Image 1 (tube, helix red, strand yellow):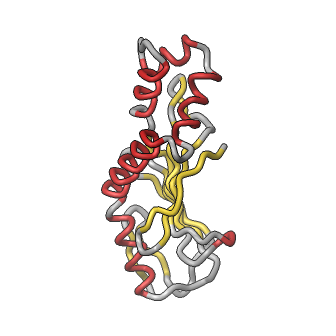
Image 2: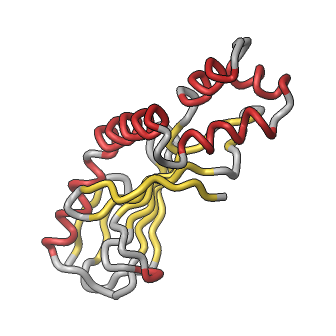
Image 3: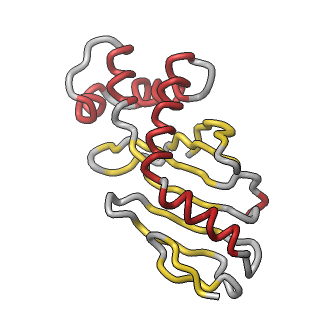
Length: 166
């Protein structure tokens, strides 16, 4: 059965490929990862709804990242601190311009985070229990850094955790 997904176009629900990839108009990479060779229409509808809500989910993620940073409970503050500690002052200034204190630099860097990739794992491919994984990064000299702030979501649309990965 053919089914149309935003960004991906037509896919055959009864003969799935293991991996699909697409890119949004804003340059965000999307991938679908399937363990099994088929899914039902209900699952396809669920994937479709997530894809249609990428922008809204991105906004929710930004709020969660800001909260995580403000409370200092998760990994966001350490992730941002990494840039201040590991990059030369000129490199930091190249990303955020002139900022005074480390706290001002941290806040400015936080606002430079951008969504790089969203991976979907609707049937547990690679043994993951996460439905969707959102990768955020900061660009250095116009290129995305390999250090990622990762937001892992479960279904039904529940943010499970924010982690720092490279």
